[in-house]
Structures are given as C-alpha cells and as structure tokens.
Image 1 (cartoon, rainbow, N blue to C red):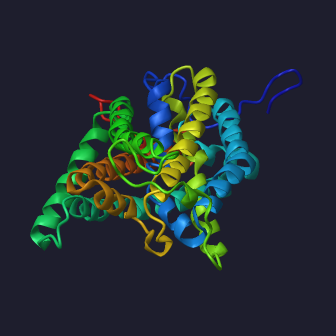
Image 2: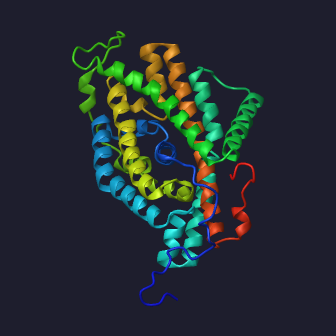
Image 3: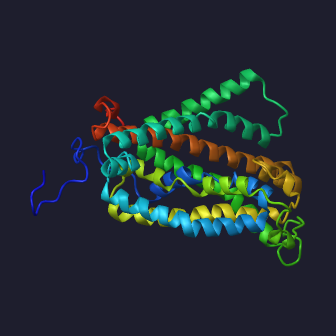
Length: 343
C-alpha cells in the first residue's frame, strides 16, 4: 500500500519498463490509428443512401465535434497515463477492478477476431469488382484469400514497426486515387464539367432523401466515427508516447474527417441516384464517369484499404492480449514474443 507522500503506480502487474524498444513513431501511429478508425472512405455510401449527401456531411461534422474529439482526447490522456500495451483494458481494470478489465479485454478480442475474419472475403469481393469479374471460381477465391492472410500475417510477424510502415504505404496507396478523383471533381463545381470532361452537378451536394432512415444512418455514422480507443492497445510500443500520442490523434482526426467528407462531396456531384449508393458504389461511379481503367484504379485502392484493415486488426488484437499478459490479467505466456522480431 502506498504511504503518505508516495504515488501509487497506475500499473500493478508485471514490470514492463524494460521491455523491447519502443519503435512506433508519429506517422506509423497515425496510420495505425487511421486503420483502427476508418481505413478508407468506403462505408459512407450507406449514409448517403439513407439520408442524402447534405445530412451525411452535416452528421460527420457534428459527431466529429461532439463525440470523436472528446473520445480522441480521452484516448490521448489515458494512453499517456497508462503508456503500456493493453490500452483500454488497463483503464477499465484501474477503474472497476480485475474482473471487468478482463471481460472488456476478452469481449473486444472476440469482437475483433470476428471483424478481422470478414476481410479476406471482402478483399476478394473488391478485387472482383475492380476487375469487373462476374464471379471468381471457388478455388481461385480460396487461393487469393489464403495468400492474403499469409502475407499480412507475415507482415505482423515482422514486428509492429514493419506493420506501421506497411500501414503508411497502404494509407497512401488507398487515398491517392481518391485524392486525384476529388481534385478532378472539384474542377467542375462552377461550370458543370471537370477538366477531364466529366459532368458534375453541384446542386447534388445539398440534396437530402425523402423519408430518411435515421436509425440506419446513425448506426453507420457512429460506426464510422468511433473506435478511437483502439489506438491505445499498442501504447507500449510507441516512442515518446507522451509527446507523440496526442499529436498523432489530432492528425488522424483531420485525415478521418476529410477521408469521409471529401469523397461524398466529390462523388455526389457525379451520381444523384441515392438508392444505388451502397458499399462499393464509389467504384461503380468512377467506372461510369471515367471508364473501366478508372474503375480498376479505385478498386485496387479499396483492396489496399482492406489489406490495411486486416493487418491492423491482427495487430490490434495481438497487442491487446499481449498487454493483458504483461500486466498479469491473463497467463504471461500470452505475452511471449518472437526473439528475432519481438512481435
């Protein structure tokens, strides 16, 4: 028990002060956080379908200010107070005790595992949509999924520094095609025709849909703007965590909002058939206005999105339970690392 004048340590489990060197730097943490929260503009199509582009943009701004910023600030503060792996499971344990900390950790682990299991199939779906394939032979589909899982598992086994570098690459490959199309779209705001000759209707940007489905809209909106605490699970791997974490979350917030809002504004000018807006519709819009090659480019970008989401899903689950093992919440064997990569 701490006596008068002594500060009680926030972490009471295994001493992890001398664990492996912290190798995650600012931009690696930005990319890891980006894939924990967003991972790309896809998913926002449903918001447009259920409430229209104007409400989608308004919702992103309102929820971003009222919910995402406070959650990001909470994550930054608690990650610097608990600068070890495990993240929010350590916060819950400190506040409510061992049982609730362990429950929070295991429930999130199961949820994360189920979520990660979706991505190999989603990768094949986006690949088929990018190449405009009617259907992929089951043997080819399984082969692609197995190679996808093996490649990104290998990236994680190479260590979290490599996952961070890979995430930066995935983020750039994902966002660059969107940035190019957004730039092209906005050249048509004033005269109705872009520099590439694509027709653009500015009036679409302020449209709503009759009888919005607010329940579905809010569910997708909150899902897209949440999960800021996911970045905390690898706090023990972040170099200069007290300086880097708040800055990384601030940068990520700006990227996430732009990542959602700008594609909606750009693509809504090309297509006002709001009923058709569903997951993957950005690829269809690009193909319809720019031709098959543009569709392939944006489809490949979506594939990089799925790769980043899957790589970071593995990373997030791994370091969550690693931190729980380091803190004595579960058997310490779970925190065993590979000797050659410290993964």
